[in-house]
Length: 250
Image (cartoon, rainbow, N blue to C red; front, side, top):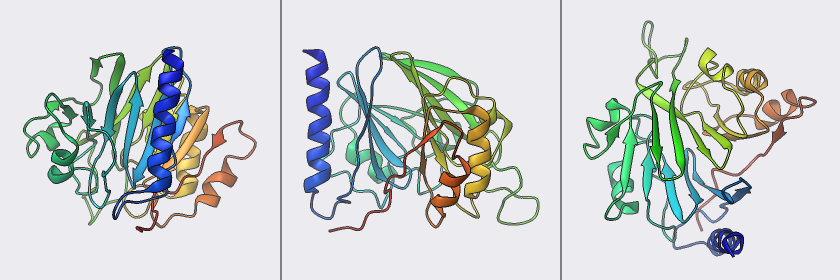
């Protein structure tokens, strides 16, 4: 019965994606992953915004404009990677929140989203049946001017979420850093790639080869040539799933 309920929820997500809402991005492509605790459904929304459903709970990551959340369920938990406007938007947070919604975020976000609980690089929290690890995300060499980086070390978090024996990685905005390459036992990885803010597809592919998830899904890739990323991973045994994170509005 539990399996049926989760499968039914996945179908509902799919119906939402198929029918769309007023001014909604209509090409949402739910991804369902099996775990020992039941299915985990990840629904891409836009750019770096997504929602995860498992065990009747909904976790949003980086809800921000211009993503449209109409027709999607309210958040039980919100995770924010860092304080840039395409990842942190108080209006979007308010739109998906309900009584009891919790928020975890780095201290740079807590300065603005004061209801958030701080979580720092290297810290682990338990939330319901999930384990949440804050992973470093930062630039090594790219920045707006000499001596400055778009994402300094310690300013933001990637996240590894564990549920039912499976580990899901969400990179946030990062380059090919050693903390990413050192990740272990990742089932599904959501990895950023875009210039000048993060890294190009070939660098992202090199990072992914190092920690070798079973499945990798590019996100936050506006303007990137995903064929380069996919081709660089051919023959590695890593499944590459290319989803449309930038659908046109109806």
